[in-house]
Length: 560
Image 1 (tube, rainbow, N blue to C red):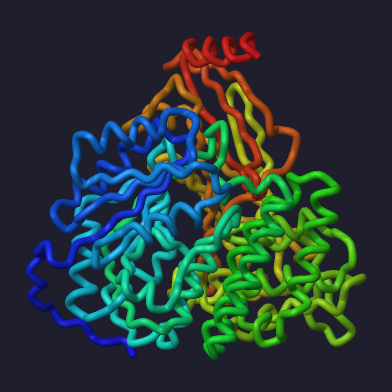
Image 2: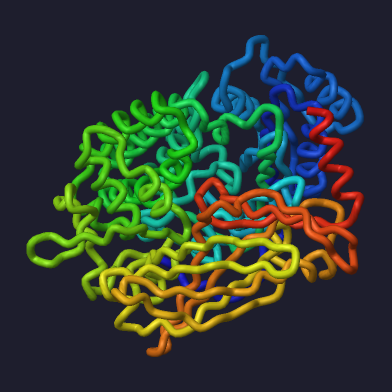
């Protein structure tokens, strides 16, 4: 049951309900001190910080020992042998903890101010052995914050059991939560030992299977640092080897078994659809960047896993995810990779051809008519979206429509040649009239100029075309601009129809213009513009200006 939360005075924060923060580290001497200090900065709510060094070889252990000598709340555990994962050191920390509550913190992340108080206050106020709060993924070095599962943390809530909120299975993290230590020990909840890549999944499933009362707060309680340019990626971000996907599937199977064995059918159902909506789409988006051997093995592993899904679980997933799953199930070998990866994007783009079966219903292709594209024949797609708003991607305003964009960059004038593809008559019925293109600076979403143009229908009615001016010079003069540094800009299109429907979508990069261009600029002498395709196939731009930018790029080339 979700209790209505009226404003209440918080409990007195006294040391009789201390929190033990377990920090795990392996070869992270450059970041671990910041993590520990962020826990200590929480104040008297934190009774101890237990730092577990997983047999580091780079000075991490010495850095932790130095912190412990100056701060009595820090206790250091040195493991004699590296575990290969995150589960074993976290289990060591829980066994050593003495606080009433336990939290987990990775060595390269931080707790924001007030995080522990927000969670502990909610747990004490509602008598909940588990409290959860919002997490942000901070992309570094840009410091761009992306909320994690924002729909779960928009407002305070208390659930008597997780069955009252099956959507909780979408948040598989353990680090944005506080746990009563006795709850963990009484239910024998622990992380898988050794090298288990997605240990959070299994731990969280055990927590939900124990059916605790859960208090949810909207406060940001964890900052997850994502360093994609790091020399060595974190275990979960290193997805280049197909073994990572195999580990994710193994973890998901374990989650389903735990929830089903405990009798939580609704939670298991939600976990299955989450796999389709989130995990499957994420890996399909990257499939075209992998080699042939990876694709073949990935396809085999995925088909084997999806074969165990029931039809209601497939139907409960959003339209793009269930279409992806059905294509994989219907074909014994990888196929249609460009269409699949484009469809897996957010927002998805369904590329032509747009085939129909003998009864006129939309299907994947003429040679795969057994894969229906349900939700495109005029019926509302009832599946909710990822952020919990309840809006399905099959609704007219969120169709996965494909918009091709060919950049034509020139010294005197630059344009985007656009083609909007119809989607089984949906767009034709709405009457596409105009299209606008907006540029957004990736590091802070600063908007650039918006250009619009009227759409011209093709003779056969299958598409509409337009040419939009691409004004690049103003981008390097906007507030916060770094003219000499190549800045990435994302492009978004907004389609306006005669019936009032509007549709926002990214653009699909096409054509020979995806290369660096050096252009004259009256203000900055020279302008560098590089249209390119992102991993998901969307059109993006890198823009820089001035002689200094040319010198930097030339120096990098000489260095290589």
